Amino acid sequence: MPDNGRNIYKAAREARGLTQEAAAERLGISDSSIRAYETGQRIPPNDVVDDMVLAYDSQLLGIQHLRASADMARSIVPDVREVRLPEAIMSLLDRVYAFTDAHRDRELLRIGKDGVIDDTERPEFEAILTELQGIVEAAMQVRCAKINAISMR
Image: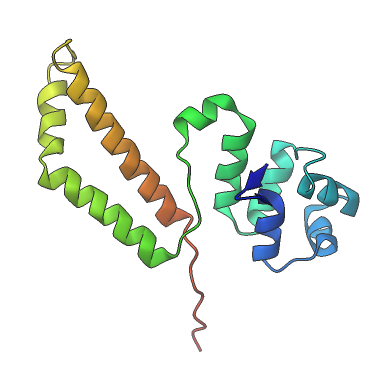
């Protein structure tokens, strides 16, 4: 399961600054299991990935694992990449403002208020859904953004 040529499990562990041995200890699994996951020999079970997400402090890893392990998830869960927080926030706000400035919110209300989407409304509705998916993706990027920690003393 590579991410830009890199294994997502290895990238998340290294981003946290953990050795394979330290990660294995935190996760309560063997070093050989970590190596197998990071070389693509085995896919970690979901409960191990849940633990990795916590141990590596990486919600991004959870999203990447879900998308890589289930065909259905790829059609629902946005493809989120790691970005810095300012970039993620600007992208989200840009999409939200563009949506509202174009009055897409009002179009959605107009289309959906009767509870029926007829054949003439369908293309517009699908276009709005695509725009909303972009907003959801941008919101998830904010949630998974790389945050520079500042020590408060």
